[in-house]
Picture 1 (cartoon, rainbow, N blue to C red):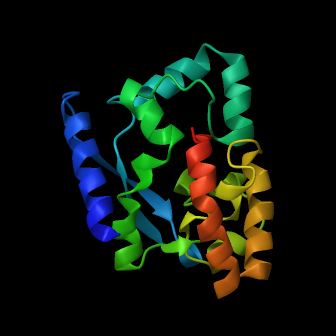
Picture 2: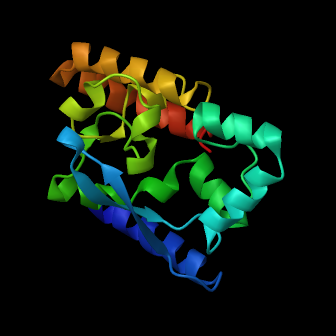
Length: 183
């Protein structure tokens, strides 16, 4: 499985490089017990994406409200053309297998959270687990819930966490990915 993932990441990295920018992107995320780690992804956004986001939100109150509610945008001006497909099918997240390998993440767990999102997250279940490459949120509501509702999925997963639950979530992940509901 690892050689296939590496081959896919290699091809995608080459396509991203043809765009003229670096293929990989790292970002701080909160892990178990609130420890900050460096999360790896394939680049799916334009350079200076945060600046572009702030400019967009300043001029678009509806988008600002959506961002405050979900911490995502359905029509995100930062996403590149190739990035739309990478995100739709979660291919931008394949480099996170490195995070799993080094122990910052697990295959199954809560979606990794940005440090600045901590005040928006109700509850504490997230901080008792390592974030995962996939999880209950990713196979259920995915992009159809508020950021705060993600906490409900994390709390549910913490209560049901077991080898069997992880196998079930892992088996349902390809279904969610092939639906192309990622943003």
